[in-house]
Image 1: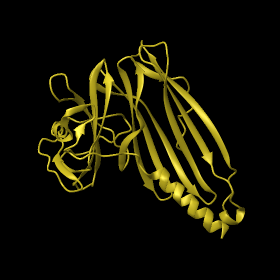
Image 2: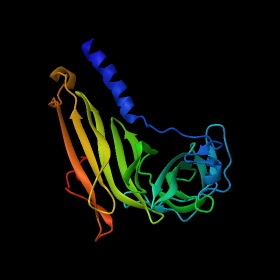
Image 3: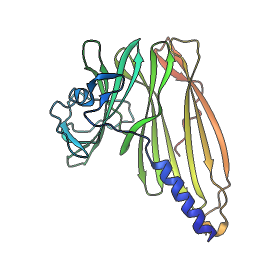
Image 4: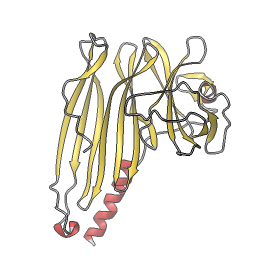
Length: 275
C-alpha cells in the first residue's frame, strides 16, 4: 500500500514537472502592452494567409527563418502547417517597446516536423516584424515564469523553455534570450533531463534573477536545484542500485562582456547538467 501511495504521489509530481506554464491567446485578443492591436495583426506579419480554426490555426511560414542556436535543427522545411494559439510578451529593448511572438507549428511534411517561430515585433510606425528565429528543441515550447527579466534601464532578457518526453525522461532546454539592436540574440541555453526511477524522481529546477552589475546590461543569476527523491526501499528497486537522496544548488552568473558584445558565464558548472 505504501509503495502504491508513493507511486501515485510521484506520478502527480511528474505530471506537474512535465506541464507547461503557457497561457495562449485568441487571435482577437489585444497584444500585451498594445491594446490597439490584436494577435491576428502580428500573426499576419509571420503568416499572412492565416486561417483561424476552433482549436488550432493554419498558415504558411516565411522562408527566411534562422536557427536561434547550434542546438536548434536547421533542416526544417518551411511550408504550410497548423499552429497552436500564440503567446506574446511585451518588454523594453534599447529603450523601445517590443513584443516577442511565439507560435508553435506542426508542419505536414514527410518528417512531421515541429517548429517554434519566435518573432520580434516593433511598433515604432505600426506593427513590423524585425527578426524571426526557430527556438524549438522539443515538442512543446513556451515562455517561462517570469517571462522577462529587467536587466537595465530600457533593456530586457526573455526566457523560453522547450520540452519533450521520451519514456521516463523529460528533456528541457531553457533559453536565455537578449533582444538587442532589433535582433534576437542568444545568452545561453541550459539542458536538463528529469528522470522517473524506481526510487522516485531525479529532477532539476532552475530559477532566474536579474541582479545589478557593472556592465552595460545587468547580471543574470541562474540557480539550478538538483534533487533525488528518497523514501524508497531496495524492494522498490529490485536488482537496480538504490540511489541516495540528495539536494544541491548550483549558481552561475552571466555578465555582459563589452569587449565581446555578449554575456559570459562566470563558471562552467552547467556544462554537464543533462547526463
